[in-house]
Image 1 (cartoon, rainbow, N blue to C red):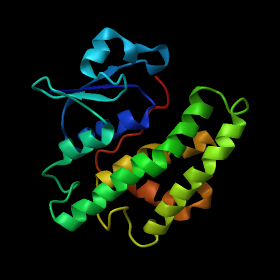
Image 2 (image 1 turned 135 degrees about the horizontal axis):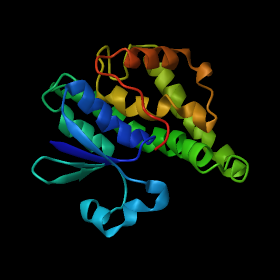
Image 3 (image 1 turned 60 degrees about the horizontal axis):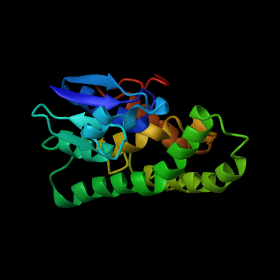
Length: 202
């Protein structure tokens, strides 16, 4: 059985959990309290020397970090990760976009506001970062004018990767109501078989 070490409320930890639920892959969840420094304990660092969640431990004991790498591993051989070269590259394009353009603004501001309570203390930093998040949302909105899902007309791990932090972007003060195509896409993702909601906090 797979073991997923994660923190409840983390979009990155939610991604592989959602995928495994949707693919019918049994796993054990082990809660790791990131806010209390549990990722820096010797036991956790033996699993992931970078000291971050999530960590996916395979049945053979090997450990994998980075949530989007987990999505690729788990979805291999399923329709959620196409085998055709172009279709696969489109999925990868959105996985890289999520890590480089989306998460650093959307997830980071949410963490500052929702978990650290720094909306006022860090308002200048937030004001600088938020436009990057809106630019990422606008890019998604444009794509969703062209297709039902981010990598085309079929649901894929690209949608899982970007759903995780987009659907809670309002917790960082982002106005999702300005993006009707994204809101419709969020509802389509929520109707997928095996979907379950991300809990807010540990």
